[in-house]
Amino acid sequence: MTTDTQAIQSQILDAFEFRHATKVFDPERKISDDQFHTILEAARLSPSSFGFEPWQILVVQSPEKRELFREFAWGANGAFNGTDGQLGTASHFMIFLAHTDATMKHNSEYQQRFMKEVKQLPEEVIGFINQAFQKFQEHDFHIEGERQITDWSAKQAYIAMGNVMSVAALMGIDSCPIEGFEMDKTVAVLEEHFGVDAKLYKPAVMVALGYRADEPQFPKTRRSQEQMVQYF
Image (cartoon, rainbow, N blue to C red; front, side, top):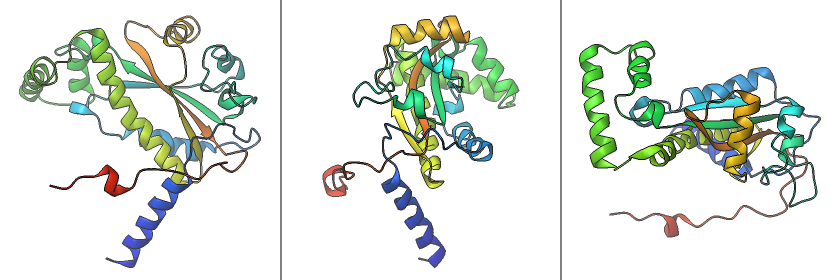
């Protein structure tokens, strides 16, 4: 193992030790545009099943827009610790939207356009992927109906979210993934105030980014590799 490889491994593990679910950020410290561009690129370049990228990202920077979620985004509003929470203190606040069955059901018009315009695939390859994806949804994974397809899309969005948080940690930037919100009220706000079509997209997860106000109160705890991993 080379010295460079060892240094990279150490850097990666240090970043994962550094990362924690930051509940309160320093509101005076902001992520630079250049750093945030890198974070967004980590999401954009993330892998997804069949390469369909079934997510959209909203970056909510307006304090007024963030306040629209205050009442029901209990995981981000500081209700548990008596603070302004991530909504009020994070440098950047992201919402990952998952595509629904309107775009991610096999052979959808959206998929055909995506494969032609984004992937730039020839017709014969598109035809093969259509058949393979239909088999995957209907036979292999039994993904049918709006809820199941949307949940599948959210699983892909979580890959991108994980990369966002990992890349942020490598740059010394804190983060917190947030599932603590009421789905129906979030959908309603996104429709009314953000122009999000609920037939096409549903919120999957929120992510706050910035710089911690204080050091973590508790040490990081995880199961050991021996408890987590089995070799065969």
